[in-house]
Length: 239
Image (tube, rainbow, N blue to C red; front, top):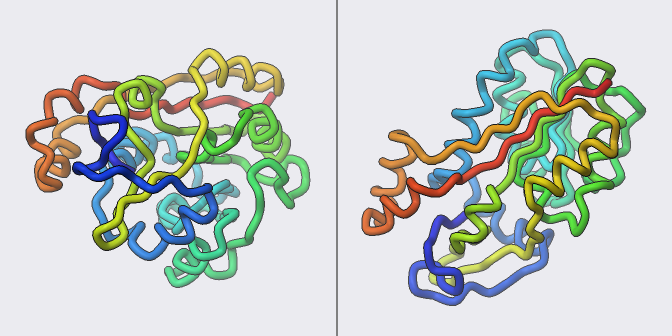
């Protein structure tokens, strides 16, 4: 995912826009190979919330290449990963502990029984849904009473600053199509499911991400990027 202050360009090139699955099908080839400050910031912020999951069932909706599943498994959780992109799942399946815990599925129609997991995470996915209501309703449905639903995504401020869900493939630049949801819209959608809001986190880049940005050759944009709330994280409790 790109962090750029120029809405129409990524590193001086106009991105080619792709539908979600087509975009991730192509992105899967390099997704784990390039440092990503947005994912690093999200991981640094969210990882402490996973401290209480040993022995519990952890569901990763839109699991991608399985980075959160690996972390949960290392902490002693039983893991399940679902994603709509077959190619991303193939990458995840090549990692230790994951191959038998993956399935292809739409976040808005999860193939799981009610109250199947103790903790459900949906990372950088909700912006691909035209409306967040169906996805949040499904996340709530498959979470056990008292369990956590964690959603992260681009912060609306980052959208306004011109940041894009973009990536490089060779000399070409691609942007994955998405929708913008405000914090108010997301909180209202969560309330409609009956979940109880636990917390909202809105982190900015810090020292670890600063070094990644500099290594990516964007030192001239550093101060602009550090000033923007980069990631939006919401935690709900299933009542």
